[in-house]
Amino acid sequence: MTQPIRSSLKKEKKRYGEFMRPLDVDLLPLSTEHRADPLVLRFIRFADATSRKEFISNPCDWSEEERDAYARGDTVAFSTLRGYSRGEIEEFLDFVKTAHEVDAKYGEDTANSLHYLIMQQTEHHALSQ
Image 1 (cartoon, rainbow, N blue to C red):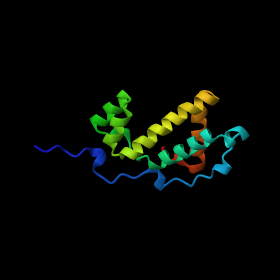
Image 2 (image 1 turned 180 degrees about the vertical axis):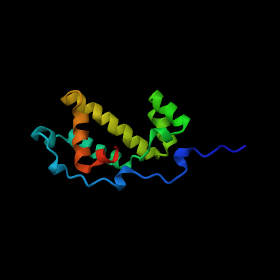
Image 3 (image 1 turned 135 degrees about the vertical axis):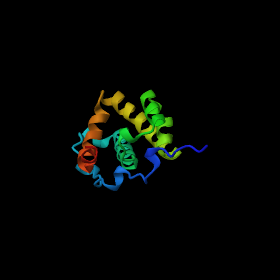
Image 4 (image 1 turned 60 degrees about the vertical axis):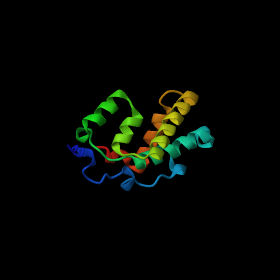
């Protein structure tokens, strides 16, 4: 007996990067300290790259396996089920690690605030609505 194709794999997946505007780090309203910090600049590169590679999807269309992996917080299983490559998953995990390092150095939610500024400039936020 063959398994049905999951609904999230039926059609070609599009990525947010196909619709996002380019990022210009020089235009981000960063503090002088953040602008000079290689950790912050690495975070910005990771945030932009992983956002561009993210598949556009609706959780209502995820398979039961995908929803379960997401609910468990199993990033690797979820991302594998969604169709991300091993390299993309590793890059995302590096992004998460770097976000924690930024927050440890500058305070909680610094990484989220920086990511928000990136999303505003690239208009990623408009695609999510």
